Image (cartoon, rainbow, N blue to C red):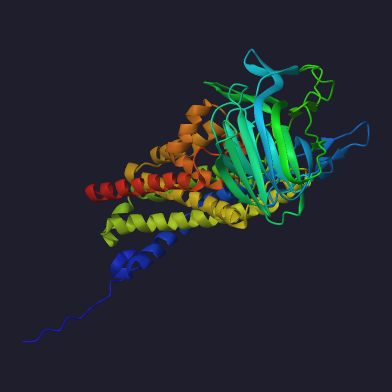
Length: 550
């Protein structure tokens, strides 16, 4: 006897039926239909995008820089900016120092012995709860005060160079073209422990050496200065970046700063090669003494001569810096980065984690989870589909908001007089796409919390506390700097480091603050921390989904 099996389609079969309804693709369509059918969730994502855009554009529209020089007409915006030098790599740089130099034609060798490096800085006397800037200068040496020898393409600010130097707190260094920095001998320089410095030029190749005795030399580094002309400027220099004081407390931190200067003392100065033999002193970018020029030995408040020569002994005093410009509270320019234009992302983040947490927990509250799991018994597939849908929606929302924030906000900031610190285009792409990816991962993390806790209020609270609150506590200086540093290392908020567009240069003191665009972890390391949190939450959600009844 032969029996015939007749397949009768189920009248209620649909995309939510998992493999029986078309596999994972059908499940994704079902979850997308659920999401877009709830008007509140769609409106929430639109609001998230608007909030992400709002802060950057609003701050840019209300930024205003005004100035008035020597009783002249009032100016505003870009008209108030000084000349802005750019380095060989196109980055905005500080190039301010006192330079005692002479022309060097062709190849040559410059050698000196550094016997002293001292400094003076603004009087930042602690009074009450905050550091106050006093009058005049007091003895003290900034960590990155520097003095030494330099071969520079020209006296034009931003031109190519290579230098060997002693520093206030970082030993001997070889630096080149503003971004290059190589460590030499450690320790401070003194008459008892001098440092011999040497630069040799062979075409466009500059090699730096240091020595403790002038006999045994160690090569510190070799650099290639592209396009170096036949005649360059070679000589001695001194400079010092501004002096800053950071006060940390349980309620936060505060920064105070002021001008500083460095004085280097040299002897055994020798310049071999095609040199003129005549030394000339030049303030590059007004990089003379911070206290103002004056007679030699006039003291901190009366100023000092920028250059004196007593036989074979050379004494130079200068201020400023030779380094890339970075964001910071005491920079010489009102700077902005594309990362700072995305500061509003944390506002959008709040709304996104609320929507994402509800995307799963609402099914428990309404009892719809039983229907979902009955149609698709593979609980892991359900969790994955919800994570993909909410992550994709958050990513698109963040991407559009980031593009609008930068496209509208940055031009407004530049028009108002802010100086944009540019970054390579790949870095800018990483910042924009990375911001969208952070919002997507935060949404995935929140939807996993919704599956674990089953209650919207609990899931939302934990998501906001772990993802958003660490950023706010650190950015607003509510907690001490050390605590904020660790919060941005170990919590999901570490992922916001992907927005950092300007690197932390070893030769520049930077303030680790999200407001300034800096984070304690590198961009990809911070993003990896957020990925680990999202993956751990999904794994725990999957285990609990499989063990618990709907």
